[in-house]
Length: 158
Image (cartoon, rainbow, N blue to C red; front, side, top):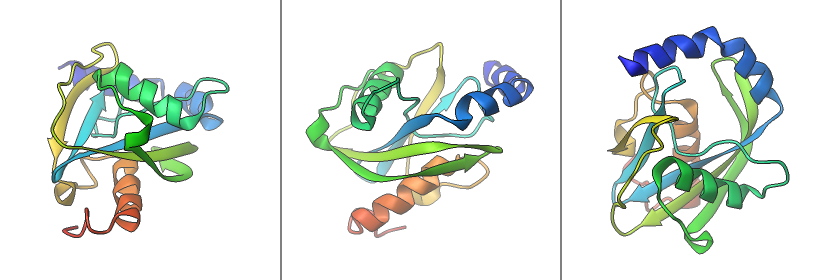
């Protein structure tokens, strides 16, 4: 019920978020454990699964921003040396466009997750080969595509 309410509010305030996001820079993290990736869903969204991450603060380096956002959203603490930058490109989804810095981190085991309940409604681990366009945001596909070029052996099954 809360996710549906969040989706309705998202579409009501879409024009405001369009203006807000238009000039922003954001981050996304493809967190890989074995054959699965971590996905999150925010309360105010179109209801699709996305990658953890968020907006950069003024003057904040993208690597620092992705570490901060992942910690805030999931309580997962990452070391900079475990993170690889995949690409930076314009994100396009739901008529919105912003600069997005994509990163990847691989962990040996699934960490404990404590969601930031005011922003994140759910998380799940998923096999990247099972992602479907109607359930996952464009950021998921962009990160998987970039990771498969960066580390083909890890994503050979896609």
